[in-house]
Image 1 (cartoon, helix red, strand yellow):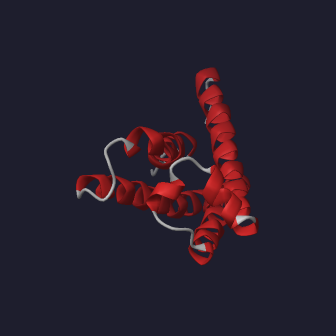
Image 2 (cartoon, helix red, strand yellow; image 1 turned 45 degrees about the vertical axis):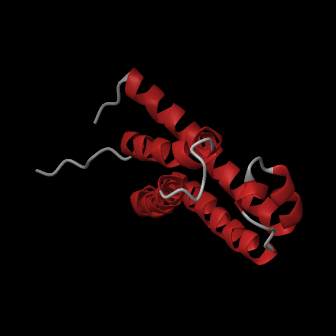
Length: 141
């Protein structure tokens, strides 16, 4: 199968974005695990979601690290890429949906959507798109 120059560019950019997101997820998770109080105070909007809960923040930090690892491992294990990225993206979609649900039922203000959008909502949307670019459908014949 011959890859065109534009398809190669899409693959390279896609992998760069997946790598960035994987590093971000892993790094954010590590930060949550190592310094949960600092994470709670530094990340915009977190203090408005409830009181500090070290155990909860560390639990989510471990999930974030696993997500980052799944994206990283998928980059180097093409045979497992789809499954790893689908599992990680599924959690990101559920997380974003939960944030939107909180707005829909009045737990959070609609003003949280622009604040949540860059890291919480756009991340799973980007991963869905990127995953389809770097995991093209297999030909069967």
